[in-house]
Structures are given as C-alpha cells and as structure tokens.
Length: 72
Image (cartoon, rainbow, N blue to C red; front, side):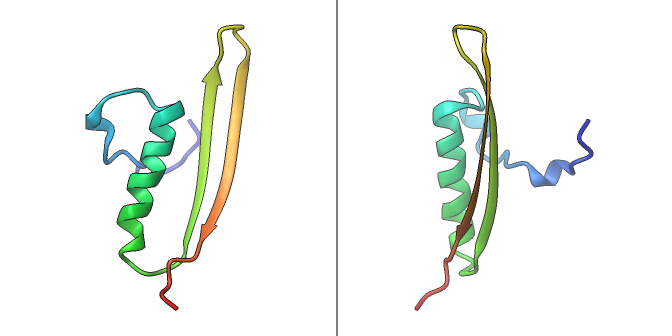
C-alpha cells in the first residue's frame, strides 16, 4: 500500500512471537542494532509504530536514530 520494499522491514525475530508494538518495538530495535553494529558503520534507523489504546484513540509514534558504530 505504501510502495515500500518488504526488505526494508525488520522481520528477523517475528518467529519469537508477540505483537509488533510496545516491547516488541524495543526488542526489534535491539536485535537489529546488535546485528548491524558488527558492520562497524553508521546506522540510520527510522522506527514507526501505531498504537490503539483502551480509549480507542490511535497514537502514531515516529523516531529517527542516527547511531555511530565506528571504533575510535
């Protein structure tokens, strides 16, 4: 629907269960960063999440991270 290549989505740990929100968002970021830090290059990561709360309000969250993984 957004014309984004499926390869742009991090799905490596989807087999571990849970839902793609809250704690899973943090777990996905940690797993992705642990894997990518081995390449010793800068990482640019855009994280987007949708949350439906008990009041039936929909919250949208977006964070952009620029992480320097190069050794000094």
